[in-house]
Length: 422
Image (cartoon, rainbow, N blue to C red; front, side, top):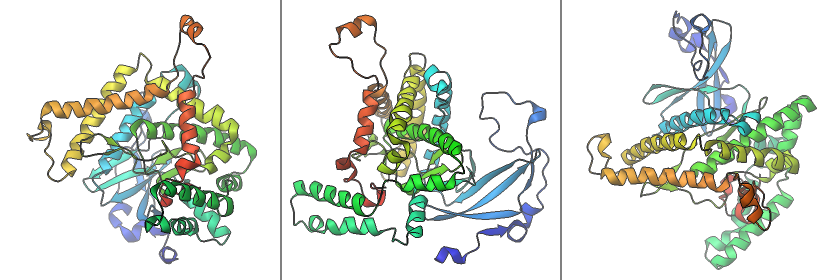
């Protein structure tokens, strides 16, 4: 392969003598103040030096340099340097800031706290407009790498399912069959791929070979299920799509998940735009890895606890204001990126009506809170319970979402590059 011709590690002394000879006194290691606990001045970790090796990281069709910052206590923190940023880069930072606030809400709620629910939020350091440093982990891997590893081990072409799927739909592309029959053709192609090409045990086999013992498997599976539940909940809450396997990073030792390009898209009216038939990514390989007990006991219950935590009476008002600030900044950035779109008055005196801009923000906030209320477990009084003819599960909202995400008829409607069969 072409990428194997290039070195995987560069030397700092050869690439940058400035970094090699860089000596600082009072520069602190980033990310020490994200916890709510106060750090004593004498316990603050200072930057001692930059590591001698610069590793080359290739992900998502891009190549990055990974720097190692060595602290005064001997600890190492890894950061990848991202350049040529797109306008959506700031949206990633705003999303992580929103998640950091939500982690504080999870910590104040009984059900989410007892499940140790916490969204993984890596540190992002903006250097200047087109450069930033993102905290990285040496154990990061993507779902796509798991699939490609399986194909390489079994001497298979990784794009074979995509090619097969498109060949089966050639008649639909050429307009030779009716639109009603297209869904049946897609479902038939999807079923053929899952039966003959892609099994549901690929991810399970990868993790069983990666982790050293059954104890590690159990701990990883529990943490990974909670992290996947949170990612699915956030995808549904903010209507974030495009979760192809190459955009989902997970650590092979801790099970923490970090999503790339994780921010909502907007239509011409400034409303969240989402057109996927599945509410979030939850495919058959994940379902097989967790088993029925993991899906019911970990994924569904964690999503319910997360929804209940942020719409509890004590947190609803805080969530409303945090979402309002988030969508205000998002819509300002969205209006700047669209050619010919008027700017909001707060962005420099544009011609957009302040009432219209406020209405867009409030509508988006109300829609998000409405989606959360639709799946959050309800606390009914004894009188209300007695009126109900048949008891209903408090998890029915999340259960319906999980069933929709796993339904083959919905999965077959996804783009083949989304790898719905994996």
